Image 1 (cartoon, rainbow, N blue to C red):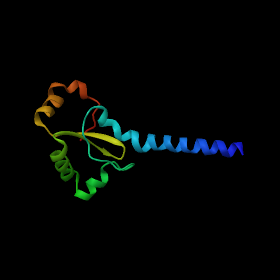
Image 2: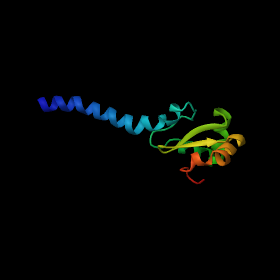
Image 3: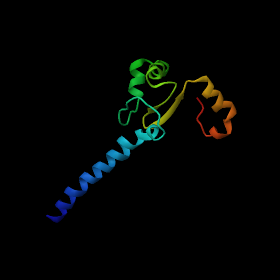
Image 4: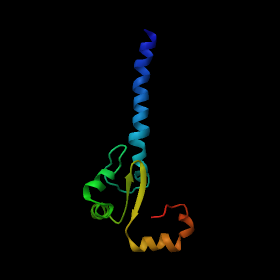
Length: 106
């Protein structure tokens, strides 16, 4: 009886922690920095939108009209930053290159 009671308490807690760790928390990355991002689907991120629009170029064009020239999006739970402003790109790629050495090649 006592073990069933503990299971009834711990199961919802474990379920909540699983939800927070894998379905909510990964998609809060850009909100911490005040950046906008399209709505996400847990485990998929924005990949379904990209497939629906045909390719990533179409998706980036659509999102840039709605969220501006700097925004975030997710492939799975991995965050990606889209910078579509030439002046900011110049700042990142040339002037402040040393601060961005760990970025992935595109």
